[in-house]
Amino acid sequence: MCGDDSMIIVDSREPEKWREIGDVVKNIQADFIVTGKFGRFVIERKTLKDLLNSIFEGGRFWKQLERLKEFKEQGYVPIVLVHGNLYRQFKSKYRRLTMPQWVGIKIAIMRMGIHVYYALNDNEAEMFIKRLNERVGEEKEWEKPAITKKKNRTTKEVCYDVLMAFDGIGFKTAKKLFERYGNLSRIFTEYDDKKMREVLEYDCREDVESS
Image (cartoon, rainbow, N blue to C red; front, side, top):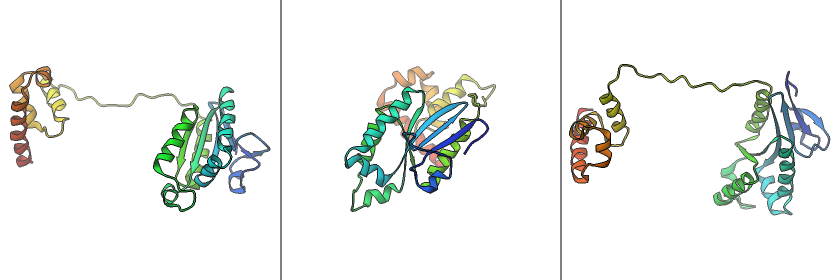
């Protein structure tokens, strides 16, 4: 599948369903190559079952990771795309996968400098590859988020907001704390634990009653 500035190359040994989403080429030393004007990616696709089999039967998976590292040295971003029902694999009687094993496998892959993407099913995995193909053909610049700042606010109001970010502190509690200690620095460093607890217990009740 080719875009104006990108293309998906699929290894000829992939099942028919996956060969349909790209241009088929023999022996590309990976399952997919997604390349475009603004990025190059190499993908090793694994179902959960195939992942476990390739790890525990002969170590084939680790040899495949070594090939991905070779692609990385040539400027490609290596990705292991894993798809399948994790819950079902956790409950499976054959080749059962545990959560510690799953976490350990991902860490082992990432320690080799290879990304891991987990997809819930075939559809998501296919969508990931196609969307990646679209993005490597697009020039994207980072855009600063449009964060609206409140204007004409007093320093005291800003301090109230900081205090109200803590659990158990509402407006009345924040106001009383500020009035008692005068500034945030004293509140955080000089208050007496017992006095603070008394203030919080009293004003938490007020906040609840007034809500």
